[in-house]
Length: 471
Image (cartoon, rainbow, N blue to C red; front, side, top):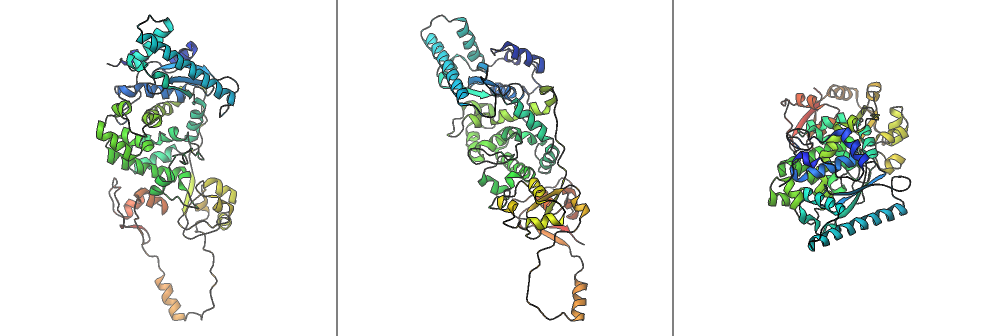
């Protein structure tokens, strides 16, 4: 039987000053009837409450010069919160890596000694009794056995998370609008805090990229990823892909905890977990033994809930102050025909380097000018550009052989037939109402009005013709 919330909040860490600061900052109370920092949409069962609280500390309390030594299955068991020796930089020095390895060996030895004392039914020293109490509270006495193989270290991320909160000021509003357009919870806009801390050029060791950390293969299902354009690195286009992925995952898996976990573990993997344990994310985290369901997958949902808590109450966690970046206010153009970067920049009287800095999804060949920007590519321009210069960049003239002049009567007929025509867009696989609107310079509301769709109608299908302009 698991302890109640009040018992869970008793201090367990070795640094008394840290605990006093924590209690002053956020107290021991849970938030609402759904448990630790959860909600009806994002519930937190008791099985993962310690995990959520652990990641809340990592994101909002423990600094990057602090290293936490803990059990990697039962995150309520904290052996030590220690200060990293030497200067604190983005990566560890060799001396710091050696120090961490030595501290992990020390704590593994402690656990082995406790295990031996329990097996031999010897009396325990005070420090061993305190350590045993942590195991009993977090997972039961049996969890001591084999714990020497589960000692893990985690560096504090408070400074990195704070910077991510500041950067999120640039994207939060538009991310929420995208989530709304796809009918998914707005708070999924907090997911990049877990994935990348809103670092636009973030790349993982396994090839995931961008703020939303899409793998190339998954990215190709929801956006353009090719030799010249990689929309994984455009935070806004990738947000649209993430919303579509999450909506699809929720429809398949039936719950937001499972859908969010699938963002790390895959929909197929979570479908297998659901087949064994249903929608119970607590049991899945505690008991599922899927081949690739390791530490990252077990903790992904808890990390999201913790990140949501810290970001929602950022001024409480970062009372020293936050410098939010200004919201994204740029014009979006979709090229009708291929153009070199220099010609595009000249048309809107901006520098090529300025365009490159706004369009993070352009690969090197486009930015260097060695390849023209393909037709259909999104172009972000400084705010007001399309109002200042309403014309679309003209195509590069094609040199053709000289032909006889058009007879006057035929030219007159051509002019009469050149009146504006109704324009349509044929829906392609995986396209959404939001995507079609965005690519044609419309809002979703305007697109719905043009096609006599209800205000809450988001359903479109491949092959459907949508009116996008004209008479």
